Amino acid sequence: AAFISIQAFPALLDLPQDLEVSMVSCGSRHTAAVTRGGELYTWGWGKYGQLGHGNNASSDQARRVEHLVAEGLRVEEVVCGPWTTYVRV
Image 1 (cartoon, rainbow, N blue to C red):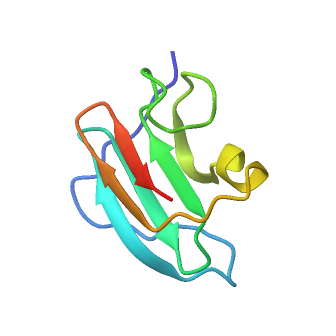
Image 2 (cartoon, rainbow, N blue to C red):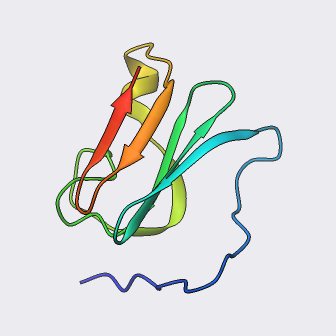
């Protein structure tokens, strides 16, 4: 079982330097960010697949959701629920 740290206060996020975040949404234990280029990055608790990486793994590091990129989809909006992530493309 992966340990995911809980951040009670804002913390710096490591993303590649050329990315600009336009939107962020927080679920109960996970977070998602949309870049100005329409890519989705997610991190946190992933037990129910809510991170969108095709598995139930958790991650403290922000990771790009590659399936959306592979399908040529541009993310316009993201909303996280308690154990879900909704994406408008």
